[in-house]
Length: 120
Picture (cartoon, helix red, strand yellow):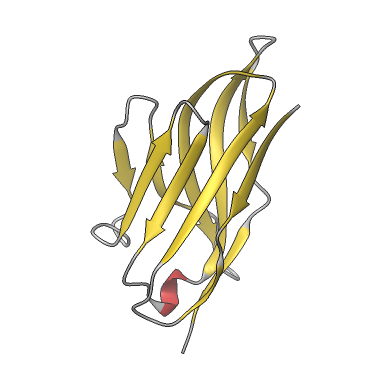
């Protein structure tokens, strides 16, 4: 069993900051790309940021310069530092990871989601 568990969502005022974290656990052989997606009410899920095991990153244009993704390969964690938050960043944020388990099966895993609300 492989799980992704997220933490760090909440309510913040415009211009504020939040940090999301996600930890992978279970029968893991290796973790490839990890990332964060978000889904706002009435909208499709979209990529926010992702990072490869080698540390290469890419970001949605809407968050460039404000959000920073990082990971700790030894711990199997990925984080998203979100600064200068805007009301349009309000969404449920999902952790995502491509994981090879100890049976050598590669799958795309999702966390349960964490709510981020930016409002005054």
